[in-house]
Amino acid sequence: ALPSRVTRDLLGFYLFDGGRGSAVRNAAGTGRDMDLGIGQPGQVQWLKHVLRVKGAADIRTPDAAGAAMRDAWIKNRGLTVETWLRVPGEAYPPGANYVHTQVRAGDLNMGMGINHPPAAGDLGRLCQSVFTMSADGDSLVRTFYTDGRFDVTQTDKGYAPYLASNRVGVTIGPAALFQNQRRWKEFDIHAMAIYGRALTPEEISRNSEAGLPQPGGGAEESLGLYLFREGRGVTIGNDASAGPLGSLVVSRPDRVQWTGRGLLVNAGARLVLIDTG
Image (cartoon, rainbow, N blue to C red; front, side):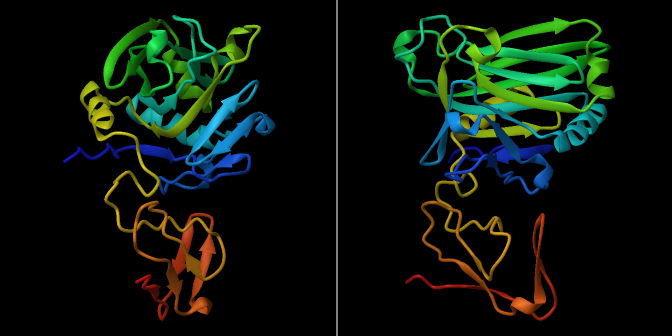
């Protein structure tokens, strides 16, 4: 059996299965403040369970998420951004930066380009890219992993205090967007996770072995998963893409209340599973 994904200190989890719009809902259950925004939404393309990011478009955490990420840094002195990406091969020379992950703290921008896959023959395949940040005294240690394996690390003296004293944000976009290259690049993003600490190499490898998180919570054998993202109505759809179970229906609509975090169920109400046969 595949190992389960790491969930401790998970701040945001995104599957890019919304199919439209300029926001990506946070499925981690930690609140709407961690929903992602899309810069230049006219330059992205929604595909099935994937978002194609092109041109000057980027994906970013909102200002409202900044305090939660700063507080996590203060508590654990670390952050992790994990993405599952596919980079089309036809537009990239070998050795080019394809995707850039940038962490913002006040007027300080810190990031790393994703130089994977390095060989032109490997372009077009799905890969897991992980970017961790941790503090070593007042030094900021940035480490990059690809497909569960260590890639490169960089230490910057005096930078760690910036994350403790400023709201923190994350931006991901085509490398050309940050490097002022003439030709814009593009990539497909399938899933993304933000953790409020630096994952260990063992945890990063565990997530890689678990494979691409699937719509429906990451388990291909899931029968049903209900994320209560509708925000209104009396029917809750099954978010497990291959799950055979039907929707849930609220038995007493007058006894429930939709909130920004989900569905509040009061005494007397029940959630009834519809039998799909």
